[in-house]
Length: 76
Image (tube, rainbow, N blue to C red; front, side):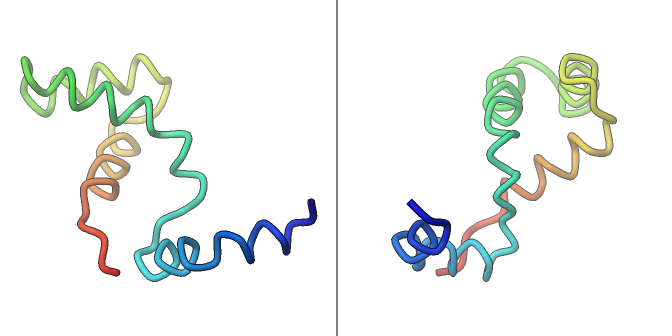
């Protein structure tokens, strides 16, 4: 399969992603976000961000920005 074929097949999804500033690289943050949701049930936001930053070897600011970006509502 060529890249253009993949883009054509997923055109509408990719258009929505582009319109909402969703990066394809955000897929690498799915596990981080899932961990955030689970930990947030028991701990304060700042404690969760600190824990995730250590676990995933990222800065707290990176984790915080990623969480904020992924929590935004999608506009069709």
